[in-house]
Image 1 (cartoon, rainbow, N blue to C red):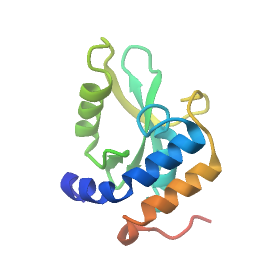
Image 2: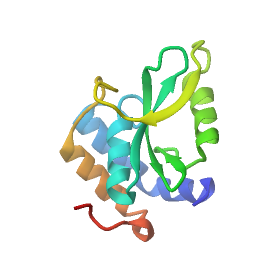
Image 3: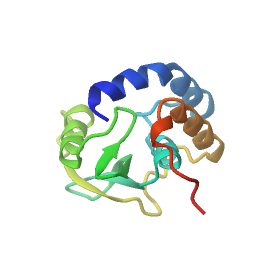
Image 4: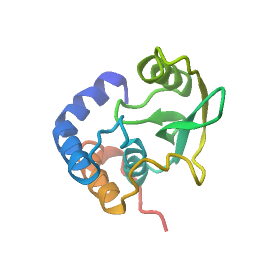
Length: 140
């Protein structure tokens, strides 16, 4: 899936996704809801939840899904290098911080973000409406 295709599909669900995030977690997909978005994408696609980390400290800044060699968040899938560049330009611009890449999520990462299984399920249902051709079998 390319960026334009994702943008077209995302438009269909944007209002529903933001409404669910705001109602349940008082945040959007880039200001606190990145972890539940990544977990919801994982339920639909598979893959591994990862975090982007700061180069200087290793502190986790953002969650994404690593699936089929691409990193996914609500802005869509990109190659890891393009995703890190986009994150650096969009989220860390002007902060002096540098993104040091990504790694698998670990206990203690993103503790200030919502952890809500019901919300993850709701978001997964929303993503399934635009990703029916990529849905995987449930994990055992």
